[in-house]
Amino acid sequence: MFVLLVVLAVLLLLLFLDYANKVRFSWITNHLPTVPKCYPLIGNVLMFTGKSKVDRFELFNRAFRAKNRLQLAWAGPSPFVMVLHPDLISKVLCDPNCCDRPVFYRFLKLKLGIFSAEYDFWKPARKMLNPTFNVKTLNDFVPLFEKCALMMVDRLKSCPKGVALDIAEYTRRCALEMVLATTLGASVLVRDENEKFLECLRILFVIVGKRMFNGLLFSDLIYSFTQDYADEERARKFVTEFSLKIIKERQEVLKGTSPEEESEEGIRTSRIFIDQLLTMADSDGQLTDENICEQILTIIIAGSDTSGFTVAYTCLFLAMFPHHQDRLVEEIETFHPPGGPAITPDTLKDLPFMDQFLKESMRIAPMGPLVGRQNTADIELDGHRIPKGTSLSLNFFELHRRQDIWGPNAHQFDPENFAPDRTEGRHPFAFVPFSSGYRNCIGWKYAMINTKVMLIHILRNFRLKTELRFEELRFASSVTLDMLHKHMVVLEPRSRV
Image 1 (cartoon, rainbow, N blue to C red):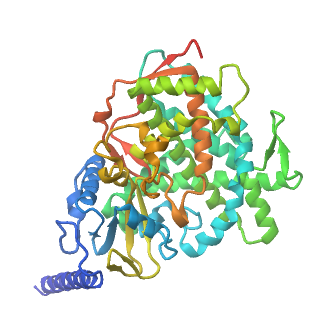
Image 2: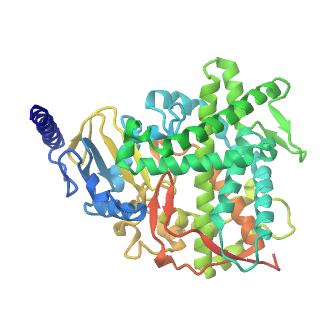
Image 3: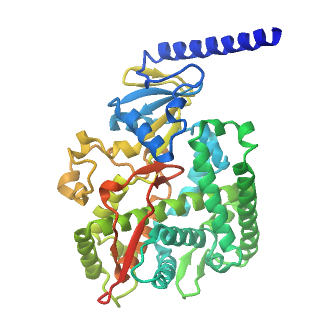
């Protein structure tokens, strides 16, 4: 009886504290509208319990659409302010007091990497890394991108003819090979451990994404008893050891090289990212091997899935809309004719319809559909005071579907959304495929270049077809945008290209 009374007393205390916390937050924020079905202790978590990842994502988006600008949700005792209007999104992204990441970014376990680092570490790290993404360095990578794209085409040519395949398996591998080669060096492409490295990265992506959308797994204690925890630890151990091994090797190589090296194709190229980081480490002594390893892993994780999936979605949309595919192939043949000179950074700029189509693909399928921020000081949004330490959730997936911005057909695929006459006067934060503001994607130019190179080589060699219809697509979210269906396309060899 005594134990029961103690348990009851503790439960009542928790209920009181939870109620007081919610009342206090409502008072501070001037009664910010709250998502319905908010229960004591668990908040809004119950509405997602037992749902598939697709249903969870659709429910989440429906909750965002319920209010035009701003509302409040609760993940247990923790408040999440949901931001949807471009005016407010721009205010959050451009506020120096909104540069921290919410707590769930810690699941990546890259506390020193610029993607998930706290603001105090992120700011000097970002300043240090900016020179590694300068235009000259990125332009010098184009021949290496082509090499990887041609390897992908060879793999695709060996696939059974007329059989649908998941194009994402090939584009993701190609993107990963590109980012590995430009981050760790071309020699990484022929290492015996590559396949295991690729598989371990895949395991990390899947597990981290699963944990981000499962409230129970937010608890480190509960998570430590799961099989996912054991699998993650094994995968992370191999990936880290693999990266540290290459860092040591490159440190030795760097001692005897000049700032620019000649590649095996005889092309003068800028130093790869790891060499630039190692040079900085030697010059100021602030970077440890652990720092470098986490920055390298951040670049690999952010650069591989995003570009790989962007190309996969673009290929799927091209297969769904053959008239757009024909127009894009005609443009490619004009600026990059078969048998013509190699792709150059300058010629990549002369593809206006490819730019339109890629942007529309990223509008419909943004790789970062949900982005989080945490304010380090009180801010005000629409007259509501948001206290320091609040998690802010920005929904780019729904932002890109607002009918007041994109018109009544906002849910339809239309590359003309990015025709010059349609973009004039549009809100600058209506389209944010690489985020924006203080913590925008450092590698967005890198991603656009390697994405175009992959698409050019795919379309030069294959006509894309699919039985999937655009209306059938259902999306989900993990670390990046996911989909119920695979990116199934049929490749027909092009005899004239």
